[in-house]
Each structure stands twice: as structure tokens, then as C-alpha cells.
Image (cartoon, rainbow, N blue to C red; front, side, top):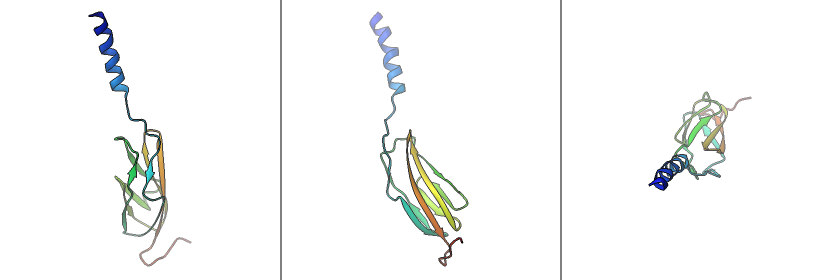
Length: 102
């Protein structure tokens, strides 16, 4: 019985502390060229359940679950992160008429 009392808390600690070891994320694109109003999807492989997406400039592009929406002319970096692993996609947005920032 003493062995069981010792073993159960150890097992519980191991199970709670276990999380997948994400070593590398791979995105379906490393660079996107979009026009204002366009929507694109970036797929990711190698991610755990803790995957988060961010945009370096939400005035240029927004991102939700890998769905990227071009908001205004400019450049932004979309980042996917899972654990310590990160991957970036650089996004260039032009106007619907092809206009760019000068």
C-alpha cells in the first residue's frame, strides 16, 4: 500500500506536466502578396493545441486561426506559435488597384 501511495502522486505529476514537445512549425507560405480586402489561409503543421496567431500590425493584416485578412496597404508579419516553436509569414498588402506605399 505504501508503494501505491507514493506511485499515484508521481504518476499524476507526470501526466499533468506532460505536453507535446513542439520542435518546429511549418507554414504553408513564408511570403504572401495580397490586395486590400483579400483573405488568405495559412496552414500550419507541427503545432500543438496551444497554437496562437499574431500580426505585427493589425492595421495592415489581421489573423484568426490562420485566416489572414488584408486591411490596408503595408507590410506585416504573421506569426504562429506553439510552445517555444515559432514560424513567420511576411505579408505585403497593396491597394485593390495595385497601389503600394512609397
